Each structure stands twice: as C-alpha cells, then as structure tokens.
Length: 394
Length: 98
Image (cartoon, rainbow over the protein chains, first blue to last red):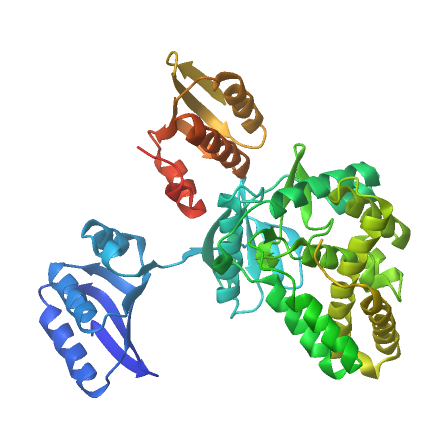
C-alpha cells in the first residue's frame, strides 16, 4: 500500500497520508513528496490525515520540513489518536491542525424540529443536532456556530453550541445544547402570557443584547448592509428621494453594540423563567434603529398589504402583532413621550420599507400583482417619511 | 446538585457535585449572591460535577465578572467532561482553570 498521494490545484498542494508513516517508510514518503513538489510549486500545503493511523518522529520531521519550506502548511482531518501525537509533541502550537469531525448517526433519533435548511434531532438527554440539507453548508455552519459562541461568551443567554459533526450517510450537523423551552410566540398563542408580559421580557433581553459591546470584526456591520439596501433602490426611487435615503443611512454613526438582526417572538424562548435567544446566524452590530426596523417589519411592515402574512409567519393576528410592536417600542424607549416614540418609529420605518421594497423587487415583485401593490405601498410610505425625517439616529 | 462550602473570611471554596443545569443553576446563583460579600478569592471545585449546561455556564460567567472587581476566581479539579464543555464554548479562554 502506498503511504502518500499528492495532487495540486490552484497553487494548493494536497498531500494525503495513509496508514503508518514511520522510520520504515519515511524516506520513501518524503521522496515522493519532493518529486511531486519539484514539478508542482505551491503556496499552500494541506496535509490530509483522514487515513493516517500513526506517525512517528521520522514522519513528524517530514511535516516540520514542509512547514519550513511553505509557511502556509496545515493539517486537516486528523483523528483523535493522531491529534494526540501532534499535541504531545507541540505541533498543535506551531501550526494549524484541524481535528476530523466526529461522525454520528441520527437513525432512530427523535425529530424535534424541521426548518427550511434542515432537520433538528435529539441525540441524547442534553443535546440536539441541527442537520443541514445543503451538502455545502459547512462554512455557514461554522459561521453560525462562531457567532453563537461569541455571543455566549459575552454573556448573551443562548444555547451552547458544541461541535460540528459529520452525519452518517451524508451531510453535516451542528450540535447544540437541548433547551427545554417554549418560544415567546407559543406563549402568546396559547395565552399563557399576555402581550404586556411577553413584550416586557422581549425588550429586557433586547436591551441586554444592545448593551453588549462586540469586536466589530467578529460580526457584520448592519449599517453597511442597510446602505446596500438603500443603494439598490437608486433605480426605483425618484432621484431626490434616493439621495436623501442614502445620506440618512450614511450619516448613522458607527456603533459596536450587538444586534440580533432578526429579533421576533419566534427567536426568543423561555426556559425556567429565563429568556434565551436562538437563531444566531443574523447577529451583527450597529445602531439600534436597524434592529427596530427589522422588528417593525416582522410585526407590521411585511404584512402591511396582506394582513394574513403575520398570522402564518408568527401565528398571531395582525392586531396582536401591531399591539405587540407598539408596546415593545414604548418599553424600549422607556417612557419617552408620544411624539418622541412616533419620531423613532418613523426612522425605523424608513429602513424597514427600504428593505421590503428591495426584497420585493428582487423576488420578481414587479411582475406580480401582490408584488406591485407592496412595492407601490413602500414607495408611498418612503416618499412621505423622507419628506419629514432628517436623521435616523435617536 | 450538592454545594459544599468551605473556607473562611475572604476565601471561599464551593465544591459542586452532580448536574449544574437549568434546574440547579439558580441554587448556585443564590448561594453566590448570599456568600460573595467581602470575598476576594473564590474557588470552584468541579471534581465531582457530571454536567454543566448553558445556564450553569452563565452563572459562572456572572460570578467571574463580579470576582474580577473584588478579587479573583479560579476553577479547580476540572474533569474531562466539564473540560470538553469549557473547550467547545470558549470558556477555557475566560476562566482561570487550575
């Protein structure tokens, strides 16, 4: 059996090691690698250890020389046993070494949820796994997990994200702590809590999120995203309105406070009296006007021209949703007078309708009747609001 | 979960045994709130802890924040199961583990 195979693509040399690499075959392995490298220069070396069972000091010296020759050399798919060797010898501190994903089976596991992206299974007493349907979901899984971990360590109450696993039979999954919790939406639908109670809990958690300072490079900047939305409308709004919209968003100061990005009653859960945030993939940072805009949309904006939308989205009636939004906004603004509340709502609505209009156009809205009605509504609202709002900050 | 208290004056050690999860985390939280006044050195002994959920980690996080202001906190005798949880959650970088 050959202990090494090499291939090169786009400047990345992949070296797959196989079985045992020790003093008996190290010289031959290194010769094979050197021969290949002579004809295939590479800036990056990836050593794939999926099939590597053991590596001795003679093998480690090969890795050392590769790392010396090409600084960007890393090891991937390293089994737990082999990882221990790299760990004991100090290699893990010297270079990037990625462990192989744990493989688990979900056969026979209870399905406890199903979303657009995949299924959620309960794997044991304390953990669940979110399995993604898209086989290329790996970067997205890692991104969401990293965001959740960042928020958790900063003190935002959420489920613990454990490891990323490979699912037997295909696909990847993200393992999370099992929450024994009920969503705020369910509490309202079942009548277990009143609108006032849920709005209070929801705003308390929101304020905690908004008081959390993040390193801006760890999550997206919401202002940049909102500028994109505004600029998309350059071709669809009267020029003067578009210019004002762009200037308003551009004038919002940089802000390093955390935002959820998709904050509504289906994304907050109650467990033993404690509020917990879920769905962390939209975490970002920025001025709270952007969060209020997305909340306005969830409860009111998206259902503006079709009141049945909020019923199928959140499970509550248009009237309840509007009441929930009004109460949340007032609680968030802590006893501000009516005129001040209205002013903040209008600022949020500008960002909100900008987003809806862009979304509708991108979803072929100009070619359907419901879409045209929605776009026309956004246009009217924006024309009105842009004529009297002079800053988005508050 | 059982909490065993020892130490005196400015030094407090809490040994935790069993599961620190959403049901038992409030017990630890209350114990800390009641005992931390005047304490400058808090030690949590986790040798006999079998499991820690996010609710438990949050209690540790708030204890850590409070102790950073009035002294220090360290976690000792961390077994393999709990270490794995500290590891994947990034708590290894925040806590003082001995």
